[in-house]
Amino acid sequence: MKLGLDSYSYHLAFGAHPDFEPRNPMDLFQFMDRVAELGLDGFQIDPMHMESRDSGYLSELTAHAKESSLFMEYGAMGIDAAYLKRELDVCAALGSRVLRTFIDFDRYDKSIEVAVEIDRAIGQLKRVKGHAEDLDIRIAIENHGDVSAVELVEIVRRVNSPNIGICLDLGNALLTFEDPLYAAGVMAPYAFSTHFKDYAIQMTNYGFKVSGVALGDGNIDLESAMKIIREKSALDRIILEIPVEAEGSEMDALVREDHYIRKSIVYARNVLGIR
Image 1 (cartoon, rainbow, N blue to C red):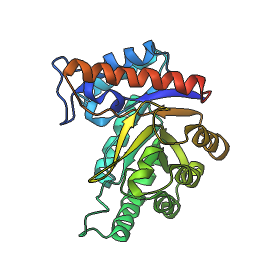
Image 2 (image 1 turned 45 degrees about the horizontal axis):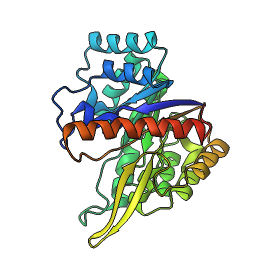
Image 3 (image 1 turned 180 degrees about the vertical axis):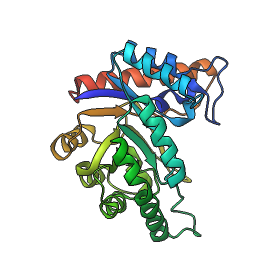
């Protein structure tokens, strides 16, 4: 089984998100070099880290990945059919066979009706599934704190396409108050990709806080999760996503981010046996 890294793991270094702005932000070429230096097999791109979608830039990214012998997966945000068709074309230009995305709604907003959002998602995905099939690209829909594992499987089944499946995010199950192992078992047979992570849960006076940590430092039973994935899915690669909060000085935050990633890779190799 191959091991990869989602570029969001270095989201502080990229500085493309609102919580942190480094003086010398990382770009995707530097990220690919880091992935190779870490001894990984490939990566997934967070779309926030794309500087352009013109053909020249896409060709440069593809060539750099090939030179480094790295597999590539591409990411999108949302399931609007017109948008997703364009992102599928970008995915094809990059040579990625997987496009990870998510539905993107707030299930805890009282004005939101989850059943309506599920029906809307199914309608949008049915409009785009033919394009995905023509390009031979598999769309991996992430459980992103919007839908539960059971709801996501319902969506995949109702769309009914061999090219529509799941990006199994192990930690995000906690955002819908699910046991990560139960959720993994439900989603694994439909998984095209993963976000393999660990979360620490802390009780505070204002409720429970969930924080990203290095693999093995949180509350998720990662060894059991890996066993479920091996037994119930057809996955041949695991994508690590190691989210780190922006705390302390710029140097402290960036050093901690890199440390969490390196520690997680050691855990994935030595404890989980991903090689």
